[in-house]
Structures are given as C-alpha cells and as structure tokens.
Length: 178
Image 1 (cartoon, rainbow, N blue to C red):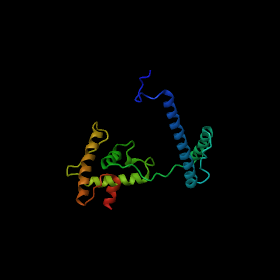
Image 2: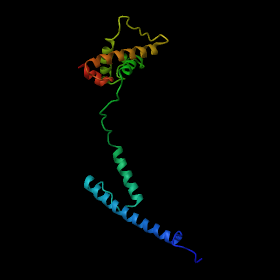
Image 3: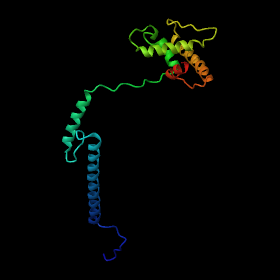
C-alpha cells in the first residue's frame, strides 16, 4: 500500500494518544479548579465548611449528611412576603371560603382578615344604587359573588387610577388608600 498519501486519516494509536493527552490535560485543569474552589470556600465560609480536595466520595457524602442533619433542626426562615391577592380574589375569599372569612375565628391570621375587611369595605363603596344580593342558599351564589367582585374590582381600580395609583392587588391598594 505505497499509495497512501498524507491526507489519509490518522491511525487509531495516534487518535488514542491525542485523546489520552487531552484527558490528562482536563484532569490537571480539574485538579487546579478544585484546589482554587477549596481555597475560596475556606476563605469565605471558614475552616469548618471547607472541603479538602483529598476527601473521597463516601467521606464527602457523609459530611453532607451531617450538615443536612444539622440544617434540618434549624427553624425555617421567616416568611417575609405573602402572596399577592387581587381585589376580586379577596372579595371571593371574604364571602366564599368555608366558613366565610367574616365569620371565621382563628382560622385566618389577623392581618389577612383585617386587610380583607378593609378592601371589601372599600369595594362596597362602588356598589351602584341597585345594590347586590348575596344569599348563600341560592344556586348561583358563587357566580354572583364572582361577578360582583369583578365589577367592583374594576370600579375600585379605576378610582385608584384617577389618583395616580396602578395598584390592583390588596397590599398596594390599601397603601394607596392611606
């Protein structure tokens, strides 16, 4: 086979050598990165949380389990923000929750109940002269509550917009009313 030219693909041995060299270079780079990470971890978190690069996988798993056990006994972080509730959702919860929020004692936290009471009272200001009738024994009670809530929400947000407020959820709407 003297007709082979320099354009032929390299032999398997040459390819294997290139792959092994590339693999060794990657392993060396990985070792450097792990060393730098261990150094940064010890600087930031202190020596207690630093993970030596020489630990085996089983030792690391055992350390992780110990840390997880310690963390599991810590109290949960305080919830800093509640979910945003639109005006019509507050209206619906006020009348349709079981038991109704206005009649509940202790099932709803005081702040939520106070905010809902204030926003429902504000929305009631926008009822037209015909009023509304909400009778829980009626078949269409839920749909009536939702329709009235959506109508009053649109009127209340339109009122707030006249004063430059873009509030459409309970918290900001109450803040705009203060």
